[in-house]
Amino acid sequence: VGLNETFFIAAALPAIVLVPVLFVPETRRSDAPPAPRLLPAVRLLSAQPRARAGAAALATLAAVLAFIEPLLPLDISERLDLEPIVVGAVFSAALLAYFVGAPLAGRWSDARGRRRPLLVGGIVLGASVPLIGFGPVWWVAVWMLAVGAGLAILGAGTGALLTEAVDDAGMAGAYGLSAGVLTVIFAAGYAVGPLAAAAGAAVAPFWALCIVLGVAALLASLWAWRQLAASPST
Image 1 (cartoon, rainbow, N blue to C red):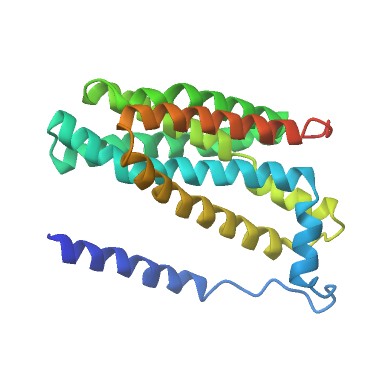
Image 2: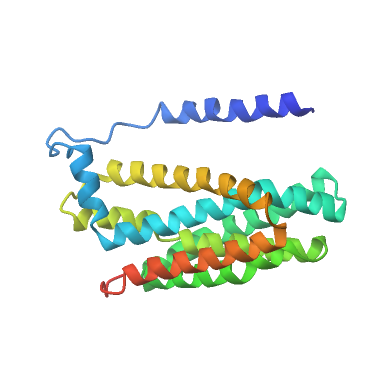
């Protein structure tokens, strides 16, 4: 339908979401304790290993996604001479894997603990991200499926970790705090990703950047995994 019309469609989606939101009842009880002050609460939260692990995993997820988004279409369009619809299909492969994998990984995280998905997600990303910079389109699509699955596994427990960290910090019930922190962390990772991509693209080819990104994602995931080493329940 055209570029401008497509943006109008995207702008309409949040407006449509407002309709069901208007019917959501208020959740705060009259006997609920007062909400903690923001800055002291954030300091308390940041001292919790679960919060640090969840923050690192979520920031890594956002940064990887935001790093790939601007560079991969340029690479496969120029290197493989693909039409925009094919480029979109390649990204759809990753999103499909994420869509299917997120609830499964979340269930696994609930059943077996939060640590293992952090490690497995990092390993999957470390192995798959470097491979999207090579090969024909089918090869890129296959490894983008793996990237989507890795992101789903890595992110499976991030929300739960931040929520559990609120409880660990003695602020049970202040889950708006953990939700707000999650949003800020995701936004920060999503802002850093394109900046790093632009800086990297000025000095190195896409395939080399993918190798660096895969290694960085693995190291960040290992750090998050180590943060939970002293917590058997995670």
